Length: 266
Image (tube, rainbow, N blue to C red):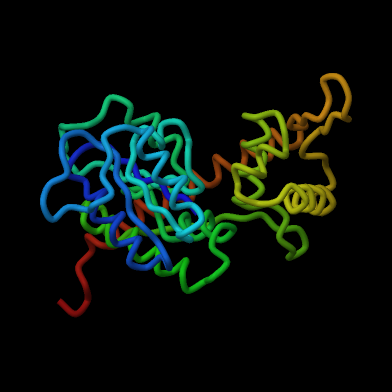
């Protein structure tokens, strides 16, 4: 498996995090593509060009189970099974011009808005071993603490039920958003890191509970093989988005107010 590490700029801890990943990933090797010369005491696998990096990775593919490559160039092109973006340190001014592109290409993001729940969801399909997933998430959490982005926060989770049965939640919302942006359920499933069959089952089960169509598949053939959101799917997605935002904003504000209240024991 190829892990590609990128970041918002210098000094955010990409190299340290990459090497920590190698400590928890079995049979792994670290490689870096960058400018300048390899300094004494630094990792031996250092290359100045992406061509040399690619040759090294190809050479190692049959030897190592995991290759952890630090390369903004590879991340920018979406190379790698798992791309990890490391956000900048607060008040950092040395930020790359392509930071938004790197952030958008990443499967995992380490920064203020990221959570272990987000990382676990993505890693579940790539790392079946739960213990290994947790070890990787702990490395990412360490990196987040280094960035100074770890703080006590109130989190909420919203889902919709019909007769006490789960009918719609964040997973389905992600699928519908993917269909809206890509025009195909297959691409939406790939972006969500689940199988097409699982995505289709989720859609059909939700439609049965809700009594309405969520997507409108188009049969194969010329111009076929695509999907669009049905009117009911668009409306439900928008309602769910607004509800999520409102609940999250309320919890955040209420939590802040509660923290400011004096404790009865003080």
